Amino acid sequence: MGKPELRGRDVLWRAVRGQRRSVALGVLLGACHQGGEAVVPVLIGLAIDQGVVEGDAAGLMLWLGVLAVVYVGLSFSFRYGARAGERASVTAAHLLRVALVERVLAPEGGAEDGRLPGELANIATEDAKRVGAVSMAVIVGAGAAVGLVVGAVVLLRISVTLGLLVLIGTPLLLWLGHLLSKPLERRSETEQERAARASGVAADLVAGLRVLKGIGAEPAATARYRGISRDSLSATLRAARAEAWQNGVVTVLTGAFVALVALVGGRLAARGDIGIGELVSCVALALFLIGPLSEFSWVNAELAQGRASAARIAGVLGARPAVDTAPPHHPGADGPPPPVAGRLRLRDLSYGPLDAIDIEIDAGETVGVVAADPADASALLHCLGRRADPERGTVELDGRPLTALDLAQARGAILVAEHDADLFEGTLLENVVAAAPAGARVDPEAAMAASGTDEVARSLPDGAGTAVTARGRSLSGGQRQRVALARALAADAPVLVVHEPSTAVDAVTETRMAAGIKEIRGGRTTVLVTNSPALLAVTDRVVLLRGGRVAATGTHGHLVGVHADYRTAVLA
Image 1: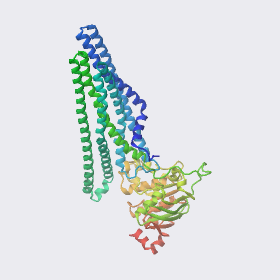
Image 2 (image 1 turned 45 degrees about the vertical axis):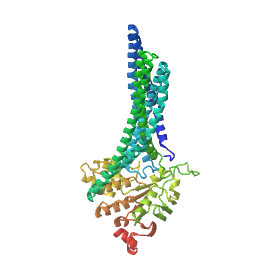
Image 3 (image 1 turned 45 degrees about the horizontal axis):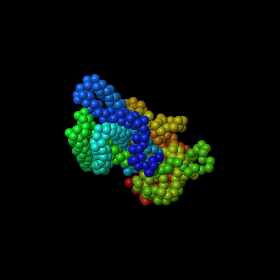
Image 4 (image 1 turned 180 degrees about the vertical axis):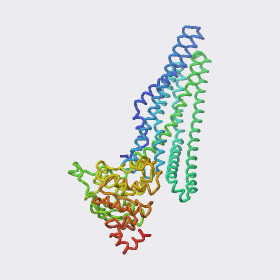
């Protein structure tokens, strides 16, 4: 379950700590590599002093051999250090993606509130990748620090003045680099938010492309996406300018610092305080310091972007659950759950537009619910499916509040088949039996016949074995509705709540679906949330919701004859 107190720094710490072995190996090898790089100028200086200044050929060959061994070690440490860093980064990003998907798909919900699907996908890909890269930044930063320390120690042994110059100047440069990274962090967060928003809108437009074409709304959709994409581009350019400005300023400061070190070393050599070989070592070390200092600039940029992405990931992982998953403990509740009879009671229920709803449904009864306002139907479905808990009042199943049941137990007893339920990639038959429990009393073929899906199967080249594309886009709207209804019927839930299952089918098919639902759900509690006269005609009674309240109750035929609001809702 997500924790509201989760912060971006917690996400960063989790990413690095979770890969501590790879990070530790990378830090060790990176330190060896940078330390070796810092020693190379010293070895070159020694070779010059002994082989050139003193004319010692044996000494020259000795130090050249040592240099060859050092370069072999540098090659090894760089290769395997980089491998450890990449492994840590990729694995951390993968684990974050898994955690994000688990949180979004968690039964308690809440993570998707206020976020488009494309936005969530962007967070799980780009943001997770940026946070994963922090592991590599830690490795590179640690190696750069070792290189600077070794370089400073060598310079101190050559000259205390040079050593102190490096020891004082380096922290100052790092502090300036940290200050320069703040604008980049702010703009990077804005860039990711705008990019995620653009991805979310694009995904939604693609998903609804058929509908947009049907109503001729392509120009409006294109204009909307163009505006959002333009905002995303502007944010990306601002972030790029901030990064370029930071890198440029840090490069100038670094160059000035290295030039200062070389100047001081040259003056010391001119006075005879250091030898020719030591001067060469000092200049080479000054040039070497450009590398670690530039890496610190890169590390600062990576950390700035990683912090911004981590804050977005924390917003998803730490989202408040829509419902509680752990019910309060009651004496005797440790035993197996009793069989579900299917008796429903909405007692003084208030949620969203619903206000003090009282509805009682007996076990095995088929009840229709007509909502004059679609928002009332949506709120009712949220409460029955425990996608949200009532603000006041309760939903009771067999005399027990749903909030007193385990979330999985409640949703297993009450299945809410949404109007816009999607199909999955696979065969038509696999979609029908996707939610069917082992030993279900409803045969898949019976569910297909009751929903009219058998006609769909006969029209397909391979019948029920025909492959269905993701979200069922290879089928028409009416075919998808029939398959979704067959899947709900095959699940054989003790309580089935169906929302508008026949809006995209013809009248003959709708009548057949109504009769099939009545027959196959015999003895099981069924709630039909619909304004369809054909479906309402097979119910035992109907409840009319108007203005968030129960306006009337009775049989379909009776309400059609005596209630004007009911006639308007179902016959208009």
